[in-house]
View 1 (cartoon, helix red, strand yellow):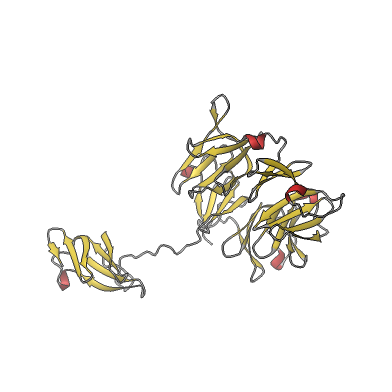
View 2: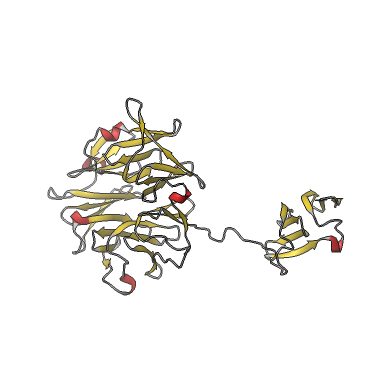
Amino acid sequence: MSFSHYTNEDGLPSSYIKSISQDQFGFIWLATRSSVCRFDGKYFKTFQAVDEAGNSFDIWSKWNHFHRADSMLLVQSTDDIFYSFNFQKEIFERYQPANKLGGVLELRESKNGYWVLKSDTISFFNTNLNKLESFDEYVGFASFDDNTNVVNVQEKNGRLMAISDNRQLLIFDLEREQQRQFKLPQGIVVEAITNFYIDNNNFVWIGNYADGLYQINLTNGQSRKFSADQKGNRHLLHNLVHKINEDQQGRVWIGTEDGLCVWTPYTESFEYYQHDIRNPEGLNTNPIYDIFCDRDGNMWLGTYFGGINFWSNTPDFFQVWQAGTGEQHLSGNAVSCITEDENGSIWVGMEDMGVNQIDLEDDRIVREINESNGLSFNNVHDLLFETPDRLWIATYTGGLIY
């Protein structure tokens, strides 16, 4: 697995990345140690916030920021103030609906709003109604005894997962209004949960601080533990898990303090990736703090002082045709123009060796046109198909040929 790297040498404000998201326009947003910035694929741009008096300043972001489906980008600062991005003014402004709630530790995205996590309660802010609802109000069909208090939630694809203080994993189907529950594995300490992730293969992953990771089957409640102490397909690189996410192939990416573990569900095994100074295309550092999958399936790893480590979902998107003598080599080095015929073949004009026709289906050069077989001059500057059967070739000092 090969990675591209973006650090402060590439314009990143800080190589300490806390959180990554993507907006409705496709831009990548990064919460760094010192500010919040946007990446357009080439340049990083830092955006400031503005207070009530109109003063602008950099946001020192807390861990998470996220982009909602209704095109709202929210950021929580280190002093627990929430800001939303004004896409027209291109500045962050205080988001008062969240700030008025007071004492919010974290917001988690939902279809109709967001879950509000505080030290003693979990509630739901309904953005459609602009109303704060209790857990029981939002999940009206929920049924559990008075001694059960929800302390952690995650929502995905119409399912709500909740963890209670009496060690229950509560599963709510919000569309069918159905509820199931399982007892949490004995090793999980509810107060020490650092990760809570639902994958697309019907598993929940729960990270316990410095104690590894638990995987729970949502069909039967069976579980297994992964840790640095275990061997074989249950071995983790480190017990401190910072982030869990899933790629479009269904693999689960686990960012730890000491590298990346990628779980393949079909083989039920891990692949491990760590920094190796001998491998410039590998990870450039080991601590991985965030993992984000963009809409094209690319994976963005936010690291601790290694910047961004980027994995492309289409590593073979570009094919390089170099000069040489074989059927998969161009005749010359100086490509000046390219066009396509109605059959999908690519025609390449060169300043040093005429014209080549590439058959993309056979992946080879099928025709070479140069001075040896009728071209007046090998220095070609333009190509134009007048009709499917007539190609005009413009040469330097050699005139037009068709």
